[in-house]
Image (tube, helix red, strand yellow):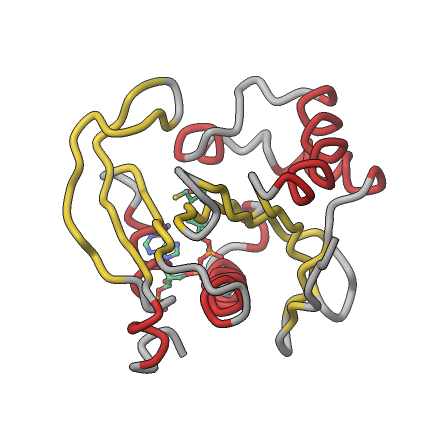
Length: 183
Ligand SMILES: CC(C)(COP(=O)(O)OP(=O)(O)OC[C@H]1O[C@@H](n2cnc3c(N)ncnc32)[C@H](O)[C@@H]1OP(=O)(O)O)[C@@H](O)C(=O)NCCC(=O)NCCS
């Protein structure tokens, strides 16, 4: 399994481990996480343990490549980010959440940039999709700041929160990186 060393001057990404379970449970109690992602609610210890235990197998199978996002100085867990294959890995969706107390300081933007640059630049992925609930203005801003192109609204397109949602579809392609849009 080839896990890259993805970091910048503020954050470092690594595989989740059992020692992260308490912090993941605590973060996922924030209602905006289940509201705007596919993280279940209520979020239990079993959910966190399943996420952590399944990560390596998903990496090996190529179905998902998930990381936890940590503060580079303190090591504190700030959030999670992952790539999830659609029909095939080269066409993947990127998903993420940030703990409430770590928001509004650029963590999501940094993490999305690191993972998407690696996926397209090193793994040769050809399209990354980033879908946000239409009401999720914060995540739409993250997508724009990370260089994704807004394609438009897809109605009743995928399950987010407790049901099928209208989403804003963003994508990132190799041409976007070549043009420097994601830097
Ligand atoms: C959406 C989310 C990931 C943003 O994380 P974050 O680390 O706070 O985002 P950043 O600090 O990188 O902010 C990026 C941009 O979004 C803006 N932004 C962040 N939160 C915002 C909010 N609540 N309202 C308006 N704009 C917001 C920031 O100001 C910044 O824009 P700027 O550079 O023009 O100032 C976080 O709020 C979250 O985890 N929400 C719940 C789960 C979720 O929505 N996941 C994404 C599903 S698609």
